[in-house]
Length: 145
Length: 417
Image 1 (cartoon, each protein chain N blue to C red):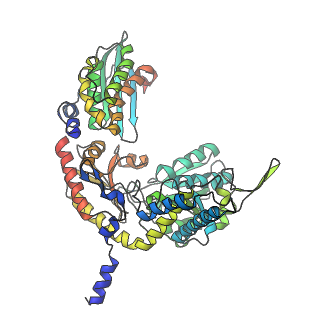
Image 2: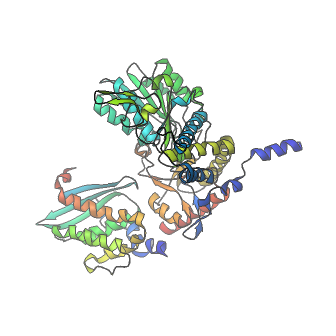
Image 3: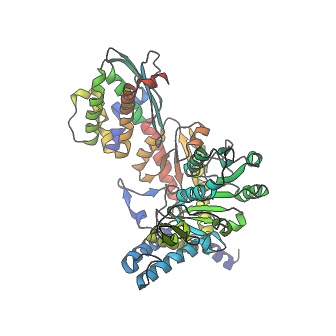
């Protein structure tokens, strides 16, 4: 059953024990992702050195799906070249919109979020951390906020 | 109790099972479970009386209104104007000339903001609203204030979600040009003392606009007794269709208001040198209106009158009382909005369960509820929560549906915590 797949195993595990849930003093890039209608309010912080994300963290209040997605994404981002983040989002979007798709090796553990695809109303939650990270990279000015 | 009295008490009570048969959607299943529709404050379901009235219009006498001499147009115009009379009756307006059809409450408020308030505002003038307003009764005033230099003032609420009426009274002054207040809060359920607010406003000769979107399905409304100047409603909250609603305004006020949108219907004579405008209320109804919607609204009002708003309210208040008592027993559950007088709305949070996740899980028990900020973000900010879950009742809901909901709540918690 789709619901059991959504709220089991790795997603719940990341929700209960999120990775990189902290503030990042060394952040060079920061953005706040707000999904007003769901009440998700996320801060993504990235420390970028020489074109690579050296460290990524998130904080804020969010539902289980957003929190798990942020936890997995911040893991995935560590050491990632900045210019691969945008294409990563596109690959992740394909994954969400095609629940029957094969796992995408490039995305690693983020493949575990595929069950979210069966809940069209919840895809936005899985995408929020991505979009926020991308916005942080595109607009480093928000790092000051 | 004498037999006759018993009989009359039974007659007074709502036959909910019979009522449910009038709502085809209630027979459907969601994820293999019977639908439990607890999202009535967002939009209520429609009875056959409304669906059939709109269907009948399209099948039998679809035509534009006030435009033709042919039979279909005459019939359509009559039905359309009958609905206007029904709205006037519903609100106890003095005349159907006081009823303007709009797309809903939001458009009605925007109409008042732009046609009534805008020409009267000078920099430093004040619009007074409350902290529990829906975005529809915040943003139009904010926009207007930005454009005119007027100031938006906000009367505070307490932790129960009740308006601090004394504070509001102290905020009405020489610069107050309008007070906007929600009759029944969609996010908290609070019923506001509108008549008292109107009395306070009268002393300063300040007009009062009432957002009645959540009140009309649950309360008998009498605009003359309330003493307000504008009353706004949405058909889809009161068993009618979406995309139609109404503004009631005193005739003497409407007469002073310039047109808001230009187009057909709102004119008397058009030339390139100038245009003379139609009489009220048509002056405010530019373009071909939502005719089927208005007819559906008229049917909804007739249906409400037949069932009886008081009987529906008694049933809904029992559901509210029962659900509140049961929810108070649940550890970690906090009800947001504990006003002494409430509409059938319960907003709540559950420790360890984000409303979004609750909404998804409980949907699989067939229960439709609302999660999020309920278009009242300042209310969420006041209570320090990003979002709440909300259940809201209509006349067709059952006590047993509360059991299904509570079971789903426990299942959600077991799954997540």
